[in-house]
Image (cartoon, rainbow, N blue to C red; front, top):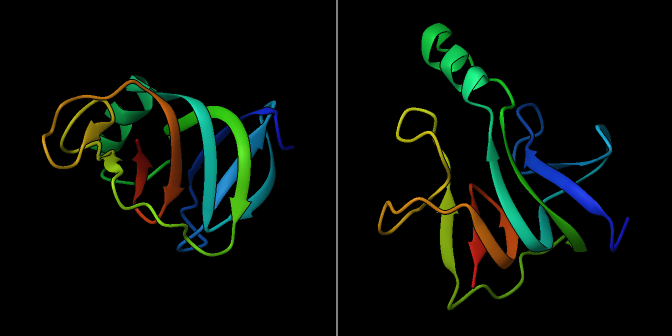
Amino acid sequence: MIGQKVRVYRNLNKAGYYSIKVAGKVVGYAPCVELSDIRFIVSEASRQRVLRDRQRNVHAYAEGILVAVHEVVPDVSGCEAVTYSPYVSGSFFNRATNVPVSTAAHGYACGADVMVG
C-alpha cells in the first residue's frame, strides 16, 4: 500500500480510525494516515442527501499517495487543521480561517482533521 494512491475517510463505526481505500476497496484502518499530494473530495449529491435526511454517510475523502500509517499521532505542531462538515461548507476548509482548501502537498489524517503544512 505504501506509495499507492489511496482515499481515506473517517470511519463512521470505528471511532478514532480512518478507513483506507485502494481502487474502491477498503484495505485497512488506522488512527493516523500520512499522505502526500493530497486532493480533498466531496460528493455534492451525497452531501445534499445528508442535509435532507440528517443521516451521516461517507461522502468526503482525502485522496493522495500513502506515505505511512501511524498508531500514534506524530508531532503536528506547525501544521494547519483542515476539516469538513456538511453543515458548514460544501468543501474541506481551514479550521482557523474557514477558507476552502482543495489540495495540500503533505498531511496527516488524525482525529477530526487533516493536519497539513
